Length: 626
Ligand SMILES: Nc1ncnc2c1ncn2[C@@H]1O[C@H](COP(=O)(O)OP(=O)(O)OP(=O)(O)O)[C@@H](O)[C@H]1O
Ligand SMILES: [Mg+2]
Image (cartoon, rainbow, N blue to C red; front, top):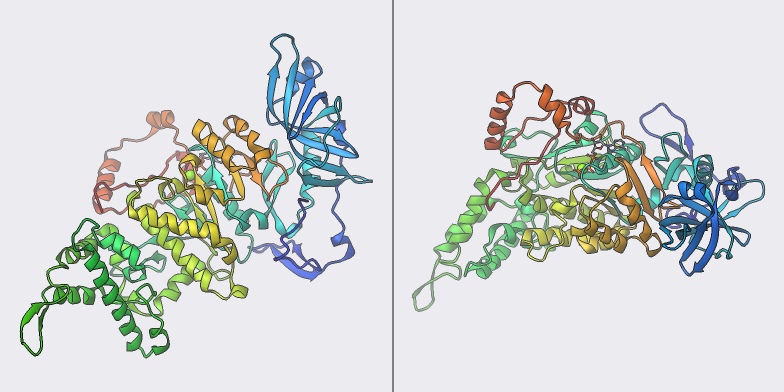
């Protein structure tokens, strides 16, 4: 597949978007008809690929594998695992990555095992065309040349020139910051979901911040980050993202504009049942039936009360229509003790739900009183109005307004066990809104799932809340492409993540990863030809990555650029802080106060201050069954 083949459904080949240098907050593109020069394949002058140092000669060629015997000690010193090499093949070059170096047991001979990754056909006058896949195999004894330094830079620049300016997503540089820019295709990166994987501290959150920062240059960028640690606050300070936080009990009286609620009436019956029903209760089935009947009737009544009879006819128990929890409880109390007088006998018998609803009433009351569920069961009074949901949806999805279209939803005050509920609800809400939006008016959206192993874990004994969240994300992974919803799954444990979601990802930004199980997961995920990249992963430095997928031409090691407004996730310099930090008594007492209140004052440190002090934030994890 040529790297410059653009998504046909998105781009009109007769028109181009030209980047206009601008001092303003966003990159500005002018839409104009394409000129013949625009349609010419872009070629950058470059050295010939066999100008690089000769490493050795081909000694064996197999389908999908080439062995090269290294010439001498200098070649042995130069050849490293993950190095990019070129071999003459017909009128062009076969590009390969060294994934193994083996020294013979009987002689001094060293053999390099290559994984072919693509072919390059030079054009007259410089430049050329790169294609993924090995079009031609090299001959035995063909020379193998190392592509490094200036040659690597100019080759990657030539390949990157195939990506049109308006589609360029600059991720970093090859080698160091002086190397060629590592350019990805911004369309392809988000078209079929992506995953950012790597050990804790490898630089995933910084990679997310970098993507957000790059996307923020586009006027209508729409990304929602599920921020489990409140890490992305500095991006709000920098005008990159808008911080949104889940409403808590302290916010009920005077809710701020940046508060997100997911009121009980927004829950589908399965979600509500998970929260208020106990599956072991002998009356659970009756209680569920009662909820369906009562809630549907109350939703219809809400619409009829405002004369909206058209929608009333189509209303189901799952419709996003407000009803009053107070009234639901009143109905429950009534039906719990209902007596029916049979006619004509006049005999008094218990109602169909009499004596069956007490445990349901108790559980709803308990949930309502539990401050951890405030974002569901204590929504502000305004949320009872029909025009509240569009306002809430705009807060999440509006682009091109005065606030950045990138939203970081701070879930840091939520106990870990409730994160799947909130994450699943947010995912469903934004997916459903996108689904029902007129296709030509949709702005595509990316849902960034940081710390995805917390709510997208592959586990057989998962609670119903976990399972429901996983189902939501699986649906988005399978169907989201058609409706403009992309997932960016970020995790330190790829081996624990939901397989369906991961297998739908088309691009992987993989940072340092040293665990064997996670390696095996990566080998399973990336296209067969690139499985060798797993061997390079433990050797990556912080902020270094290998990007695999159709958004990049080659899975070559790159140094990711450092975001200007990085997340509050600095690695803590323990030794230095133990030597220099002032006494901690006040901080401990304040910590206990926050633990009791389940509320933490927003951090006043900016990214740079945090970098200097080395502090980090964590997520509270309240014990006990919610
Ligand atoms: N591109 C980069 N260049 C230089 N340093 C970086 C880069 N990316 C991250 N770092 C440093 O690495 C540290 C950890 O980064 P980050 O918080 O992104 O890790 P993480 O992979 O998200 O970890 P976790 O899984 O624990 O959330 C930070 O201190 C940051 O300064
Ligand atoms: Mg992180």
